[in-house]
Image 1 (cartoon, rainbow, N blue to C red):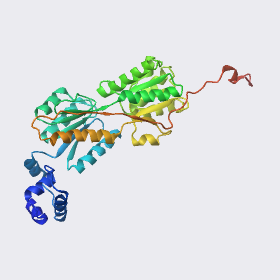
Image 2: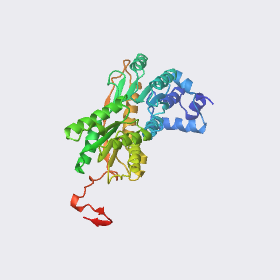
Image 3: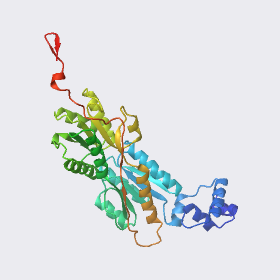
Image 4: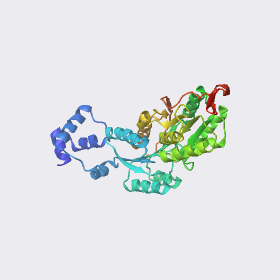
Length: 353
C-alpha cells in the first residue's frame, strides 16, 4: 500500500495526503476527514523514515524524567503523550534515575534519533549537552532548570507559594516546631524546595533547630530513614513537611513504628499529590502539582518552536505553575499536653492525681 493509493481513494493529491499526515500545512477539515477515512479504509501505515525525509522532521519528541518508579512521573508522561497523540507526535522517554551519566546517555540517544525537541523534566542536565542541542537547532524545555532564551523554554514551579500555603496551614493548627525532609541536595530542584522552606520558616519565626532538617532521596525508604533520624534526635516535631509524597509516606511509616499517630501526634504534608496519596491511612495532605498543566506547557513550547516559520531559533517561553494545597486527614491541631495536676501517677499500687 502506498501514499498514492490513499490519494486516489480520497480524490486528492499525494502532497495533500502528506500534509494531512505530517501536519505541515493547513488542510480544510472536510479534506482532512476524507484523507483520514481513506487511510483507515486501506489500513495504511506510513513509513516514519520516509515522512521524516519529506518533512524534515522526525515527528518525535524526547521526554526525560528523573524516576519512572515515582508515580508523579508516569502521570506526567501520560499527560504529555496524550497531547502528543493529538498532534501526531511520538514520544521517546528517557529515565535518568537521578544519575548524571544516565542523563548523558539519554541525551545522546535522542540526538541519534534526531528528535524534533526535548522536554527535560529533571534537573541533572549538563551545560555542555544543552549547548550541543542548541547548536543542532533542537528546541528544549526545562522543568525549573535553565533560563528561557533562544530555543530554550522553562516551566517553573512556584515552590515558595506552595510551601508558604503548607506552613500557614500548619501554623493555623498551632504548629511551630515543623520538620522538613528534603530531596538529595545535589539536585537543583531539591535545593529550591529546601530554600523555600527555610525562607518560610524565617518569615513565620518557626523553631529553626537544625535537627528538624533532614535530607532524603525522594523515595519512600529515604523518607522513612530521614524521619527516624529526626525522631531519634530528641527534638520532637509536631509536624513534618516532606519534599514529595513518597518521602511523606516513608515518614508516616517511621512515625507509626515509633508508636506515634498521624495526625494526633505529628501532622504530615507531602508534595506532588500523586494518586496514591489519597489512599494512605490517613489520606495525605499534600501540595498538588498539576501534571496536565506542566505537560501542556512543555509540549506547547516545543510545538511552537518546531512549527514556527522563522529561520532563527524561537525565543523560549517561561510558564509559571502554582501548587495547590489539598487538605486531607494527615494534618490536625497540635496535641495538647495535660496539665501536671491532671496526670495520673501510680504509687504503691494506688492511683493518685
